[in-house]
Length: 166
Image (cartoon, rainbow, N blue to C red; front, side, top):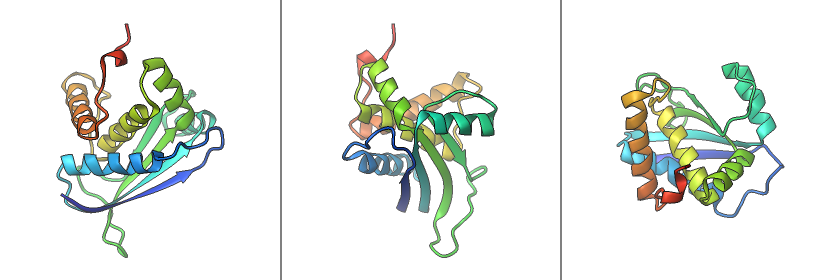
């Protein structure tokens, strides 16, 4: 189990006031995934809160996709091996970049709370930082979805019926 996790959250956007409790929610999501995955040792994750324009620029720069997305994950580890911060002993898992504007849009579209949306995006990204992938679809996608729901259920953010789009 993770001994301790440092979640460094920076708010780089001014489009949206960050709701009370959002930083704590993000920290809880990061911890829940590491606990679920039985991650050994101390870990550090960076979470950047941005607006749609900022995430669009990053998506264009790093993925050659010129449109905004909800979240980007930048894993630092390969096959479960991570750089370690020599002064703290923490495994450097990587960076999560989350568009708060997009999260609000999607929460409205799917008819659930902003907490549920931010929780989902954080859990999803944490799984990417730990090496999970869904780009090829199939079983990889199904396995990742199961892990997401397991973590969100433990956090009390279980998906409700209104999430499924007609």
